[in-house]
Length: 113
Ligand SMILES: [Zn+2]
Image (cartoon, rainbow, N blue to C red; front, side, top):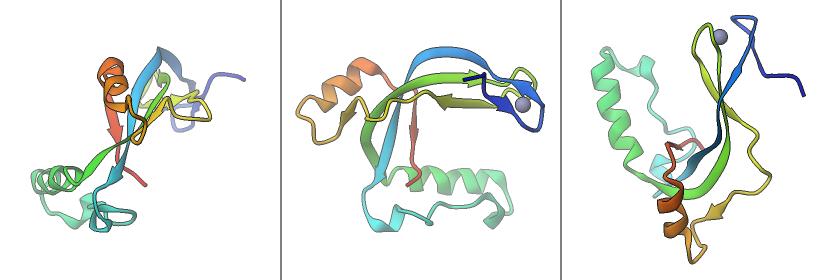
Protein backbone atom coordinates (compact mmCIF):
# COMPACT_ATOMS: atom_id res chain seq x y z
CA UNK A 1 0.00 0.00 0.00
CA UNK A 2 1.40 3.41 -0.89
CA UNK A 3 1.58 6.12 1.73
CA UNK A 4 -1.68 7.94 2.49
CA UNK A 5 -2.17 11.09 0.44
CA UNK A 6 -3.38 14.49 1.67
CA UNK A 7 -5.79 15.46 -1.09
CA UNK A 8 -5.84 19.27 -0.58
CA UNK A 9 -2.00 19.44 -0.39
CA UNK A 10 -1.26 16.67 -2.92
CA UNK A 11 1.46 15.36 -0.58
CA UNK A 12 2.21 11.99 0.98
CA UNK A 13 1.65 11.73 4.70
CA UNK A 14 4.73 10.84 6.75
CA UNK A 15 4.53 8.29 9.57
CA UNK A 16 5.08 10.09 12.88
CA UNK A 17 4.58 7.25 15.34
CA UNK A 18 3.88 3.53 15.22
CA UNK A 19 1.84 2.02 18.03
CA UNK A 20 0.00 5.25 18.76
CA UNK A 21 -2.52 4.29 21.45
CA UNK A 22 -5.94 5.86 21.49
CA UNK A 23 -9.36 5.28 23.02
CA UNK A 24 -12.77 5.08 21.48
CA UNK A 25 -15.42 6.62 23.70
CA UNK A 26 -19.05 5.73 24.23
CA UNK A 27 -21.75 8.11 25.47
CA UNK A 28 -22.98 7.77 29.05
CA UNK A 29 -26.55 8.36 27.84
CA UNK A 30 -28.36 8.91 24.52
CA UNK A 31 -28.34 12.69 25.03
CA UNK A 32 -24.62 12.62 24.19
CA UNK A 33 -24.84 10.11 21.34
CA UNK A 34 -24.93 10.15 17.59
CA UNK A 35 -25.92 13.44 16.02
CA UNK A 36 -25.82 15.31 19.33
CA UNK A 37 -22.30 16.67 19.04
CA UNK A 38 -22.28 20.49 19.26
CA UNK A 39 -21.32 22.09 15.97
CA UNK A 40 -19.08 25.18 15.82
CA UNK A 41 -21.45 27.03 13.46
CA UNK A 42 -24.10 27.00 16.22
CA UNK A 43 -21.99 29.46 18.25
CA UNK A 44 -21.01 33.08 17.70
CA UNK A 45 -17.78 32.70 19.66
CA UNK A 46 -15.21 29.91 19.56
CA UNK A 47 -14.76 30.07 23.35
CA UNK A 48 -18.49 29.43 23.86
CA UNK A 49 -18.33 26.46 21.49
CA UNK A 50 -15.29 25.01 23.25
CA UNK A 51 -17.00 25.34 26.66
CA UNK A 52 -20.12 23.51 25.45
CA UNK A 53 -18.02 20.86 23.70
CA UNK A 54 -16.01 20.28 26.89
CA UNK A 55 -19.24 19.68 28.89
CA UNK A 56 -20.58 17.43 26.13
CA UNK A 57 -17.38 15.33 26.07
CA UNK A 58 -17.59 14.88 29.86
CA UNK A 59 -20.70 12.79 29.14
CA UNK A 60 -18.60 10.06 27.50
CA UNK A 61 -16.51 7.24 28.92
CA UNK A 62 -13.66 5.09 27.64
CA UNK A 63 -15.04 2.10 25.73
CA UNK A 64 -12.35 0.56 23.53
CA UNK A 65 -8.57 0.74 23.44
CA UNK A 66 -6.92 0.83 20.04
CA UNK A 67 -3.46 1.18 18.64
CA UNK A 68 -2.51 2.40 15.18
CA UNK A 69 0.03 4.44 13.27
CA UNK A 70 -0.09 8.24 13.40
CA UNK A 71 0.74 10.00 10.13
CA UNK A 72 1.13 13.71 9.42
CA UNK A 73 0.93 15.79 6.26
CA UNK A 74 4.19 17.77 5.93
CA UNK A 75 2.31 20.66 4.34
CA UNK A 76 -0.85 21.32 6.36
CA UNK A 77 0.18 19.23 9.41
CA UNK A 78 -3.11 17.34 9.43
CA UNK A 79 -2.72 14.16 11.48
CA UNK A 80 -4.45 10.85 10.83
CA UNK A 81 -4.40 7.43 12.47
CA UNK A 82 -4.44 4.38 10.23
CA UNK A 83 -3.32 0.79 10.44
CA UNK A 84 -5.58 -0.11 13.32
CA UNK A 85 -6.12 -3.85 13.76
CA UNK A 86 -9.50 -5.43 13.05
CA UNK A 87 -10.19 -5.86 16.76
CA UNK A 88 -9.47 -3.37 19.55
CA UNK A 89 -6.70 -4.12 21.99
CA UNK A 90 -9.22 -4.13 24.84
CA UNK A 91 -12.92 -3.47 25.47
CA UNK A 92 -14.45 -1.93 28.57
CA UNK A 93 -16.01 -5.17 29.82
CA UNK A 94 -12.61 -6.94 29.85
CA UNK A 95 -11.61 -7.58 33.50
CA UNK A 96 -8.18 -5.99 32.96
CA UNK A 97 -9.40 -3.05 30.87
CA UNK A 98 -8.38 -0.35 33.36
CA UNK A 99 -4.90 -1.87 33.71
CA UNK A 100 -4.44 -2.01 29.94
CA UNK A 101 -5.57 1.61 29.54
CA UNK A 102 -3.20 2.72 32.30
CA UNK A 103 -0.32 0.83 30.66
CA UNK A 104 -1.14 2.08 27.15
CA UNK A 105 -1.51 5.71 28.20
CA UNK A 106 -3.77 6.59 25.22
CA UNK A 107 -3.05 10.03 23.78
CA UNK A 108 -6.53 10.87 22.55
CA UNK A 109 -10.14 9.73 22.91
CA UNK A 110 -12.46 9.76 19.92
CA UNK A 111 -16.02 10.51 21.02
CA UNK A 112 -17.80 10.03 17.75
CA UNK A 113 -20.30 7.22 17.42
ZN1 LIG B 1 -2.02 18.44 3.85
